[in-house]
Image 1 (spheres, helix red, strand yellow):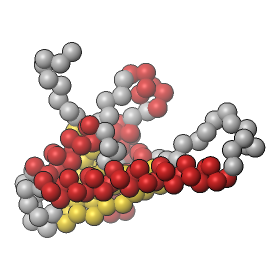
Image 2 (cartoon, one colour):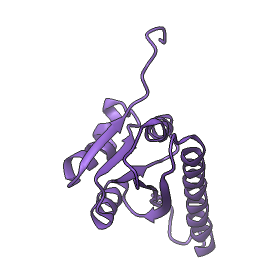
Image 3 (cartoon, one colour):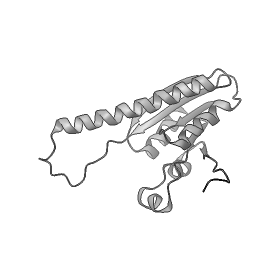
Length: 154
């Protein structure tokens, strides 16, 4: 079985890692952990206001943070999996929804597992939901993992 685990460092993403780690998977299961980077576009800055070095540093910083998220996810999965899993990972450059769906197709994944960031209605309206986009466009099964809210939480 091939499981594509998409992570972003959020609480729901960490819960998705735990969910994959705790399950009994068929022998020879492979887990490919991915995260995506999309260097933010700086709007409203005149082209002459920032140097090319600034944008290179910004891109480098975004990719470095993504690598840290990926490495932490792989370590957590390796340390807590109930069985031996073949684990690989990569940082992909581009739109999260598009890259997750493309990677699942390219890798021939049987299942995509990802956390829901739980965006509010306003943010979802403005930004769209990565998990919703993946559910609607993936050609394989998709599991969206949410952190359960405690009944005592306000």
